[in-house]
Length: 313
Image (cartoon, rainbow, N blue to C red):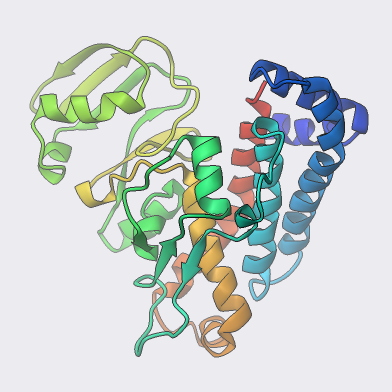
């Protein structure tokens, strides 16, 4: 975490930001890398600065306004990340929309956990999903909030308290070893060999596997230094994997936080009665999940996006 914060500090000057962007552009063989790095360095600095300041200010406020500040903090950091890979961003005005929509009218007995968001064809969400995380085709058009919460390791203890755990630890970051309990074969409706075939495309090359009655163990040719869905990394470095087939969603965790924060920010801004009732009376299970997510997202997203920027060169 300190290394990422130090890197944010390092990029605060025109000289360091320009030099860094030039390196990024040269790595991806951009024509006129030096000229484009000079052109983009001011916007890059302000995206980083505004993004981090939204988060810093949000942490000084109560939960009432945090979703709005954290969502726009995330948007600014995402735009900084995009400038490291897409020197002409935004290429069109269609990219300036959020790229996702929420329900306008809330149903009777509305709960956030059962609410859905719908992904649009154009806008920031599909654009950064493609260009930052190579997610060109999503496994859904609409997705429920509970299914997004299920993909965040820091949320798993709340599901565990209900005896509805969604993720299981299978390894640790920077290790070559992974171990999957054998009951995952039943919950994913796969044989051991089919299970290995399904997950190997998301991993470095597998050196060997060992299958017994209790677990599938594997050693990788190289250590896991970065993970992406369906593998998710806890802040403590533990790597988690979905227990159930329906939660096998190959998304970046950044994408998950974006969809959740978008919907929460819309509720915060436009549904005062429901948002106020949530904060004052805490009527149902929505409150602990939302409160936990907001706290964890504020810590994790600047770290995850800082890692994206740090690893661009």
